Image (tube, rainbow, N blue to C red; front, top):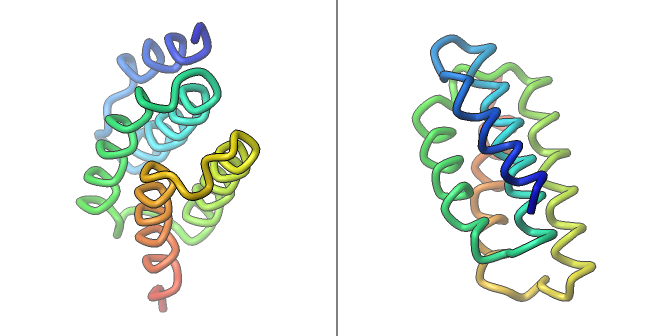
Length: 110
């Protein structure tokens, strides 16, 4: 829980202005989700929805390597959910949906 609070505090200092800050916010948000999954999965739903909305609005601003990095972060969260026995949970399905957005964005790049 303490780690989640630290990620929330860090997020409050980083705006999503330029592409670099947007990428940093995405990383911090995924780290927050990871910390929440490990402590209290229910609190991870709101940051996941925020990430999905922000990503959808800004998907064209990410480089291929940034998308690949975000996909690896999603994999870590998925592994944690699997270890907790939550592979068939609604949250896992929502996470997969957002992951698919990232994956599809990367796949459709020229």
